[in-house]
Length: 192
Picture 1 (cartoon, rainbow, N blue to C red):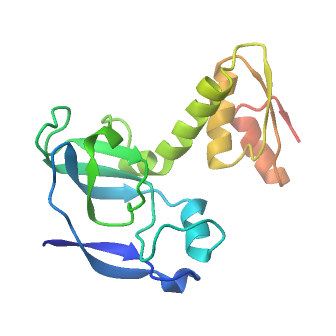
Picture 2: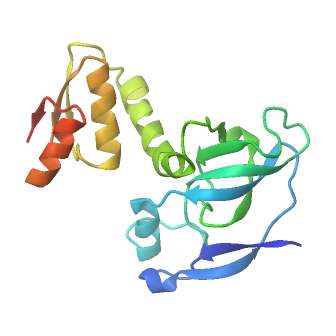
Picture 3: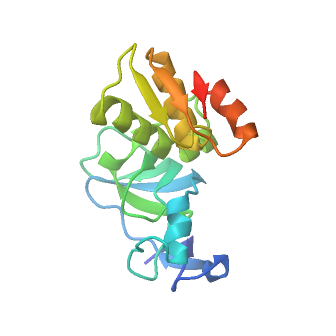
């Protein structure tokens, strides 16, 4: 079986437990894509799993849930993607901390030319979270007021910008004065 390089850990601990290893690369099956990663997102989730603060998948594990990639091969029955297409994803199962992986085609989205791999890999999970909050959990409409905690963080700043563009009054909480200016620039009407 062919292999690929991946960052993997075999037990809970600090950053020193991360290992750069050869791991098996399964064949591309029907409905799947073989992806070559060009950028990956690094999130607190992975740090929490590695350190034991969050539940961890079965060990050993390859962390990571988001990445930008190029399609190397499309399995049978895949019609929406072909070799050379740029894609991104933020999905389970974990495993984005690797050079290549096989993933179900219905877990990826096409990546437009005007979005860089780094922006896509670092932002798709946050963007999906914000969409879920603003469009599914409680659809925001103009004239409503919302409170956003950690308004200067990755997810918070996207949420503030989007809610502001929808006409909401946005109140944001932050931890420091320098973060207050970031929150204001991201669309907060009021910062605490």
